[in-house]
Image 1 (cartoon, helix red, strand yellow):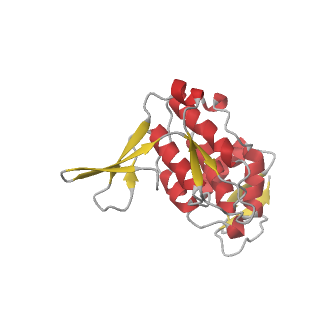
Image 2 (cartoon, rainbow, N blue to C red):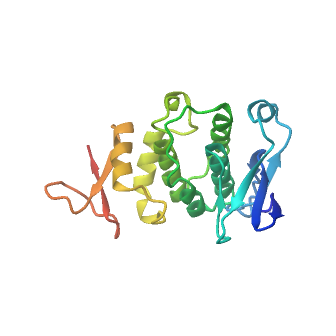
Image 3 (cartoon, one colour):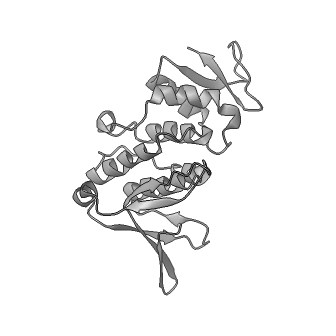
Length: 211
């Protein structure tokens, strides 16, 4: 992460990351470019965010950062996705489920995912589904207006499941839940479940069947 400031305080190690809106540079000669620029001074950013930077504690193992809030966690995942670090972004969703109302700050960060609307990487489809499930129990989930359609993402995810990183894949429980969120599409079930018609997908432990 190039846009951060490393802070040292005794045995503590912190990273300060400015939380501006992001923009991925489009380079025709390099379609998978990871260069990201910050859009500083946006009026919506000034209105919605109470802080101009997030401060993350560096774990004692020096292997990962510890977000102080859900908004900070979502923004860190956003920066990982802009850098095409899909596995690192997926790891940030582990244990991030929330049943609290979505704040203006969190809603602003969620809107920034719209800048990745053209990213159709298999792992990106899985991330969008998992993020939708992370916020499903929030009282404001219906008003969050995530910048993607869950049904379309589920269909794209299943079509590209063979190419999705194993850590980014949706678990069986998550798949069944997402099936209820998008009943017109397909849902995932365990291939070992007897009595069901299924289609094996690569060496995955999951299968796709129509409901």
